[in-house]
Length: 474
Image (cartoon, rainbow, N blue to C red; front, side, top):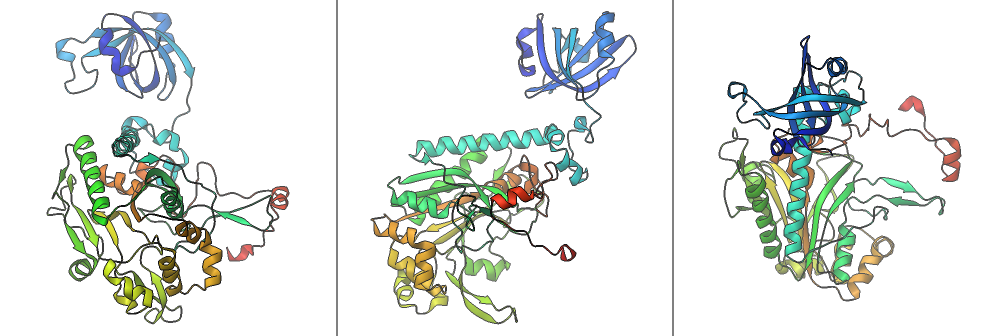
């Protein structure tokens, strides 16, 4: 029976079987030393006095996958490594079976930190990169944070619900990724930029408290804290005020830090709040870094930004300084502050209307944003009209939302965390690619899978698609 390396302490004096990778191999002639690694940790093994085993041992190289039998022995006092898992034991190897060999890896796993290696090499051989201690720790902590959040929200009556990946392209801000429909020639699904519409429809459905770890896709230019596909921790609740949603989120973030990152300090509890106007006037940014000591990587300065303008003027294509039509600052489904409802419905003093919107920032990054939503169909239609949509376009693009709201929908609101970005900060990483298992490059490519890639003419015909690209312009 296989024993995990972390459990070897329970088997001192006994012969056990481990299954692992060869982390380090050292041939010393009549003896051979190894560090073996599995998902739970590492242990040192030694071969001596067994010629038939030593013969096999001398063939082992780093990253070979092996089944090893051995006796768990206590180390002599002078050989104990304090503060290291299994630093006081070693495995006296009695048998080795090679389960798989390995070519020399492009990434030295035993170095444990691949951050300085060429990123294309790391992403091409990501399955090797993920074996390093740092990347293992990042992904395992990501899972622990997600599990804590799930448990905490379940305790408060939230239900985890998955929303569709194939949806409809609607004008929500970012550029959509689209998917052709074989059974509906010439028509396309869109991949979700967020679950925004579906989670509001769940409020219409009477679910009242929903959440999910949602996959989102946006065709945007890459940067350190952005990927074409990413994860949101998304939740929505009915009969909620701004204060309700901010309180639950604040408690949840505090619990994550205090439970899983006890070495970190939250600068101020409760989290301070700042209006958008004050943030822009004081810092020139709506996600200011308010840490008292920016050299302390374990200092976490959370900050709520509130009182956002609902609308802003777009710049014209000819003159970036010239103002064009009205656009939304966050999303068109928000509700304005109660005192601005009259101006909204009369379409007056549009630039002065404030949204019931709140962002949560951390150390200069926006890690979440949400709002109280427009649940009255008349209000949502008015918002869309201000944004320049005709009634015909409103019905075509958002008719499903208007019908749902007209069916009896409670007041509701929610928030979405940029989960990758939150994990990046908590793990002290420089970009979100370090906390995502299989990220894309900055230009949106998966060089491990060689994607995106061309498809054949037969598949294109099946999808009723004709590709017409002047390759000279690429």
